[in-house]
Image (tube, rainbow over all chains, first blue to last red; front, side):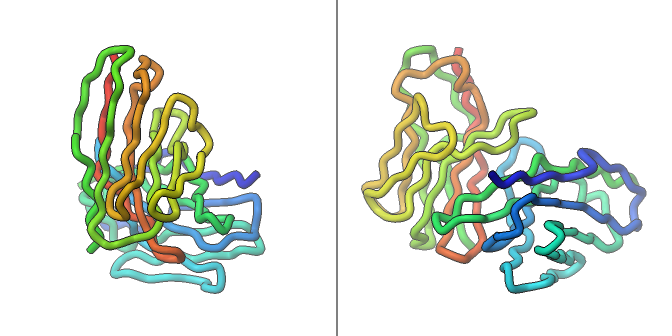
Amino acid sequence: KQEVTQIPAALSVPEGENLVLNCSFTDSAIYNLQWFRQDPGKGLTSLLLIQSSQREQTSGRLNASLDKSSGRSTLYIAASQPGDSATYLCAVRNDSWGKLQFGAGTQVVVTP
Amino acid sequence: DVKVTQSSRYLVKRTGEKVFLECVQDMDHENMFWYRQDPGLGLRLIYFSYDVKMKEKGDIPEGYSVSREKKERFSLILESASTNQTSMYLCACRDPNSPLHFGNGTRLTVT
C-alpha cells in the first residue's frame, strides 16, 4: 500500500527566505502527484500537478520537482511572504480510479 | 476556475439524525469524491463516483452512503449520525488526469 510522508510536520521561516517542502512516497508506480495548500478551517487549494512523465512544474514563485525513482517530490516557494503561511499537503495518485493518497502535511509559518 | 460548492460551512446535528451533505460542481467533471479530515488522521476517502449513478466505496464507507443522480451533484448521507462522525467533510471533483479541486468543507458536529 502506498505511504506518503511529509517531513517536517512544521516549519517556521522569516519573510523573504526560500521554502523547501518535502514529500516522499513508497511506491514509485504513480500516475501523478499534486501539491495543495490548506488555510485553517478551509478546503484544499490545488497548487501544482506533476504528471509521472514530468520532472517539474512551475507556477509563479512555486516550483515542484518529481523524482519517481527515489520516491520524492519537493515544493520550492521562492521569497516567502506571510501570506504563504498555511499547511501544505502532497497527494499521490496510484490507480486507474484516480484515488489519491495524502501526506499529513507540513504546517508553514512565515514571520514578518 | 472550477467551483465546488458545499451547501453548509457549519452543521450541528443530534445523534441518530439522518444528515445530508450536498456538493455541487460547475465544470461538468466526471469524478467526484467525499473525504473526511480529522486531526492526526489526515484525509480519508469515504466514497467516490466516476460518473452519474456510479459509486465506489473508499477507505472508510461504514455509516455513510452517497447519491449521484446528476453529474454536477454528489450527496453524502449519514444514515444515523453518531458522535464519531463529527469531522470536517470535504468534497472534491476532477476530470481524469486533471487536478483535484476541493470545496471549502463542511464542519459537522454531532452531539
